[in-house]
Length: 364
Image (cartoon, rainbow, N blue to C red; front, top):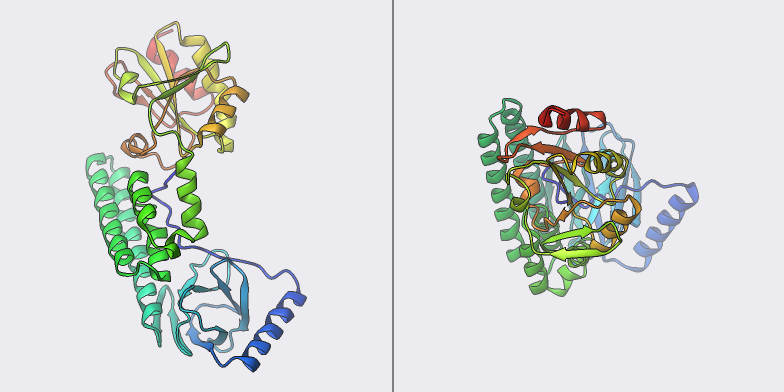
């Protein structure tokens, strides 16, 4: 699913497995420098306690490796304004993304602040990334504080404000840079903060440069495979039924309703499913309705899981993730119990808690 607590900054963290690979990279770069003066030299300083840096391209291939001596380093690659490169050092750090469009770029890293000179595009790239990360962090802290204090309405307003601000900034950057790496980065960020339908519309009108990015194109292809609306149910006899329907057709209609946010690709969900199936079979004739809401799940994979796990309760399609957003679903499985009026009486249920909550609600 599109996770509101996760921002994809195109992390290309790779480990060099052998000294042979390092030697190959260094020799390759030496040959490049000898035969081509179109080399970008990236000089920098950093206060982080780091011994070695890698420079990787947009596909994750290692372009150069350099030691950090007394806080200083030098990395080199071919000048290429069409693709970004990233400085990485460990799997927990955010990459420093640059656009090698000049012969000399200077980078100064102090804690979490990155200052770039010598390349306007690289400077703009860093400004976008750092603004998004700071905005995301500030609003997340505010949102979590409000949620912990059970001020759910204010928390929802803070989340919506954050989403709108980041989406607006990324959309502006995308429009200003429709065919360069900043546009790619902006679209990669934007797809986390807009509805799938809007993303698909933007993608279909985008430049070949944007459409050619593997991550962005992959997300578009994934969305094309998602069911868009309605209810899908695997009947006991194996027949698959697809019909019109919505969340409101099951919740708040005079019955207790158990709602399971899950996905076929989610291991913990598959382990929890037998517990949901068991209460469905035991209580469906005693006043309980059960529905599943597949999260970011392709239809073919979901239907296979329905058969494999013997799931015969309706699956309400939430392509826009509006239902997941309404109930602040940030991780799955996420199981809630609603009363006949549609109020939540128990949430984040697991294992034996599921039946305990149902028995208490039904008083059986």
